[in-house]
Length: 439
Image (cartoon, rainbow, N blue to C red):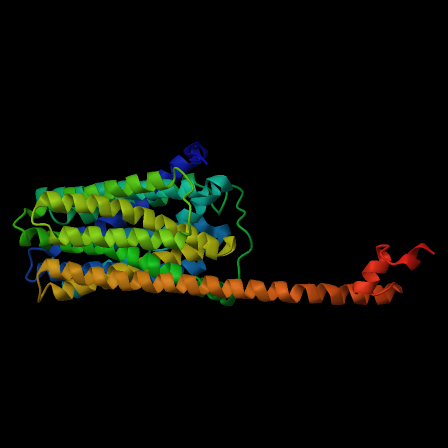
């Protein structure tokens, strides 16, 4: 296991394309908050717009992900990314529009490119040897962390230093560039376009439904990240800290995520993936709670960096668990559903925070969101334990039935050939265990 296995020209081209596709997504929530912050009820409206964006992702990811076909991957992804660029351009061009119009653009910007994450992740894992899958996913995690590290600082700097609309116009340009980048990559899963047979709709849905515990824990993982991002500006104002610090603080959280992804890929960690996930999620919850309770910027910064480190590793365990739960031909759709589930967790905490900010302090809103994510984590863990128990029971039943089935088949074959039956006596006679066999 080595990171050298993922160092190739194709992976580099994939990384450039992925940055163009994912940086707009990372920029969007904070950019939407800054876009309407100066309007009456600006923070609440910003949370609603961010929730609308994520709602588009939640709907778009499974719907479009289920339609992804390995032989036409490039065309599917390019169309979605192009429409997403139009949505971002509309938000940047019409910042004073009615909230309903802004919500419409936000939904389009979130929904249209929502299958790109799952598609690009599947493509990445086909560009590297099978033994380097964990390292490839760690590289993806580090790349994503880098994007999230740069995005908040870029959004805060451009929105406060130039104009609130500029980050969204930049997002539109980046997403459009990713469309061009797709033509530097294979047109289908794998360099030769081989991705295995596409399953039927019904069988694929059953496979994806069976992995629901992984999706629930994945939703909890991103929920905490969204909670920290959306409430942070209001939390800083509550503490008397300049709102401009939200960018650097979130950058520190993302840098921590890059460190977490790198360390996770250095070795194979002992123990079950679900145990790793629960322990990491508990650590993230402690860090976010500490950030909400800290009176100064230093305490918030340390808590967010540590939380980002643990959250990145937790999300990696979810992606690896999904690879264990699904066959290869269902992974592209599975990753898309995981993306939608994570977006659902993000939207749930974002909506909860937006509602609570009208009535309670930002720190209280954060604590409520932490409680919700801990409930999701517990439900996901319980589901994985239950699924594992059922699998073991099924395996035990199969092992109990198998000897009888083999014995019956052997007996039938023996009778058909005129040979003695494969019972205990027959086995002894054929093997020379009976003295008469020597006569």
